[in-house]
Amino acid sequence: MSKQFASKGDLAEKKTTFTKLSDNAYAFTAEGDPNSGVIIGDDAVMVIDTTATPVMAQQLIGHIREVTDKPIKYVVLSHYHAVRVLGASAYFAEGATEIIASRGTWELIVERGEADMKSEIERFPRLFQAVESIPGLTWPTMVFERELTLHLGKLEVKLMHIGPGHTKGDTIAWIPSQKICFSGDLVEYNAGVYTGDAQLEEWPATLEALRAMKPEKLVPGRGPALESNADANKAIDYTRKWVTDLFSTAKAGVAAGKPLKDIFADTRKVMDPVFGKVFIYEHCLPFDVTRAVDEAQGIKHPRIWTAERDIEMWKSLQD
Image (cartoon, rainbow, N blue to C red; front, top):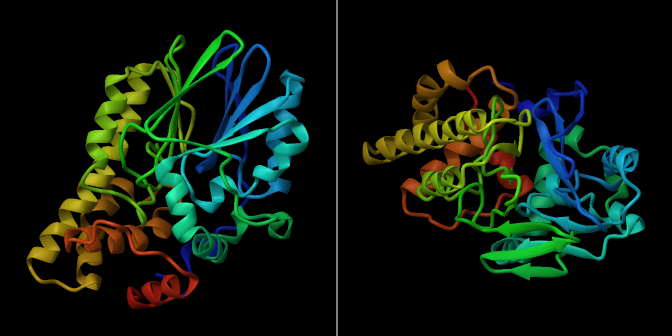
C-alpha cells in the first residue's frame, strides 16, 4: 500500500457519458466517478447530485442545455458527502430555487459537513477541480422526513428515504410511471463501495426495499446506468455482497479480539479476489474496514472523519 492515499495517485480523467433513459430522464456517468441524474418535467428540471464544484457542474449543465431550456428548479442531495453536493451554487443561475434533502442528510451536514468537506478534498483532489470555486457548505432549503412527492408539470417524482445504508440519510429519486430510480450511493456497480459513514447492519434490508420496487432502470452512485430490471438487480446484488462480506469479516475479527490491521488483512483475503480490480477499491477499503470494525464494536453512529483522522488511519494500515 502506498504511503499516501490511493486516490492521490488517481490522476487520469474519466470519460463522461450523458445517457437518455426516457423522454424525461438522463444519467450523467463517468467511468466510476460520482454520477448525477437529470429529470425533465413539463415545466422544470431536477438534478440529482450536483458534482463536486461549481466549475465541474458546468459540464453537466451543458449537457442539460443541449436537450432543454427549462429552468433547473430542483437540486436533490442524495446524501451529504462533499463530492455530491458542493457544486450546487452553479445551478442558481439556471433557475434553482430549492435544494432538497432528507432530515438525516440535514442533520449530518450540521454535525459534520465542514469536517467532511476538508477530509474529502484532501483525500481525492482530482474530484475537486477548481476547488476554489466552492462558496462553502451546501444547505438544503427543503427537508423531508420519509417521502416527498413533487410534480414537474404532469410528471410525478417521488423523493424517498427508504432506509439507512451508505449514510443514515440516503435519498432516492423515483419516477413511478417509468420505474426509473436514481439511487445515489445506496447502490454502486463495478466500482468501489465507500462505507466509511455507513449503517452496515441495516444496509442490506434497505437494498431489498429498493429491489421490491422493481426498477426497470437504475442510475447507481458510481458505475454505468442500468437499463433493465435484471441489470438493476445485479447492481443491488453487487452492493449487498460488498457490504455483507465486509461486515461479516469485521464482526468475526472483533469477536476474535484481532486488531484493526489484522482485520484489514483478513478482509483483503475475502474481498480482493472479487472486487480487487474495480475503480477506487484501494481508496475505499481502509475507510470501509475501519467503519466496519467500529460498528462491529457497537459504535452505531459513525465517527466523524477529519483530515487528521484520515492520515492517522491510513498510516496505521501500511504494510
